[in-house]
Image (cartoon, rainbow, N blue to C red; front, side):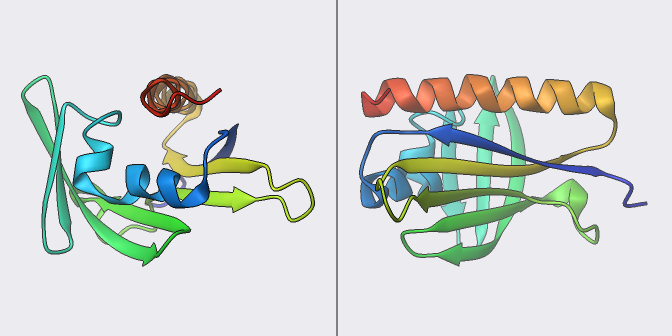
Length: 129
């Protein structure tokens, strides 16, 4: 069953792409804003929120540009979440593009709110607007 709704959100972030990449593709960087604790063993990342653990596999990583993860419970489905750094060729403005999936409209709103809250935390950690 893959009737999931794919969505992409764009968040302008005023930091260097190389710094931003450290926060979207490494356990130490992600544990500062994405989850209470993040650790990895090989291609698997463990995310811990309020004592609850979720496991995801990193299924694509392009150094300095993107990290794509798939939750264990989505294995075998065409669902993932991806954080991609986009730099405007002319203005050099940096944006973080989030691609994720939701099962229905209610979950879509929840997911958007989740990402808005997470990116707000990321911006605070980075001291970026």
